[in-house]
Length: 177
Image (cartoon, rainbow, N blue to C red; front, top):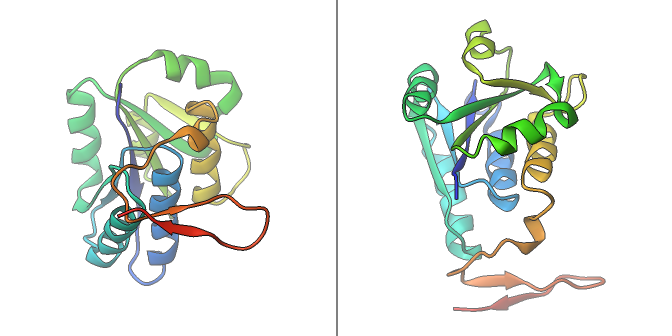
């Protein structure tokens, strides 16, 4: 199966750490294989996401500090395709089948600040969830749900220490280690 990795561009320490963590948690929960935080190393976010993976299971990669241009070019050099989530792109329903049918590894780009124009040119698809400004976390969640055809509830997260048990009310977590 093809890989799907999220590239977070524009991460700013302190201001964006919480949102970047939410990008990573969303990517993990909804079926991405990993996240790359571009340009700035953030060992705190990396440690948080690795701890979630250890506790709740599953295979998910996280790294930070890789230059975004090199990451995109390397991805494309290895025959991967690039999806850039932006309010200015083509409507998701109009391009999702084409993206799914590409059958290659996908790098999905989300930003936190104004994106460099070069990103629009490097992307194979510039995709909009609503053609309106919105949270990158929400855009990523909607994109992944559509791309992976609503399969998040079927995703297995093996080798965790705990597992959430769905309940009508309250919280139930069971120890599985």
